[in-house]
Length: 192
Image (cartoon, rainbow, N blue to C red; front, top):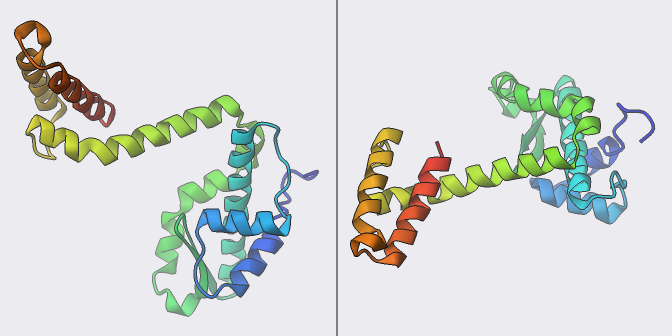
């Protein structure tokens, strides 16, 4: 990519979207582009390569969304639903366009593409997995603590101390139960 603002995936993505019978997911678009040989080598590091390819796809989609809007088409951009539909079928497209502004700004900023390094990619992935893991296990952890979903951090902390004292080995508690309670505490403490 010699010109920092030219995205080589715009034309191939548009062709895929125009030929689609349904919708795509981001990973399906990436796979289709890879099969066409349209994915350039952007980094030697695998994680940085994946970040940059994903960035290019999203950048192209947001550029296309703005262009197609002017031509009477709405490009739905969601991780699991990417598709074209006539703008007349989307009465609240202006609202949807406004809602996506933060992501659009991020993916249209070429400095993000060029300046994000491996350490930042790892930090992004770590934050993502913490949020994902914490959200997925929060219900189970709250049930183990016998608390409701609206429990405050202070209530969670107090319950952790009660259960830790009750089930600690030094107080005759079961080590396996203590480990599960500790796991629940970690889930609830990182999912603030």
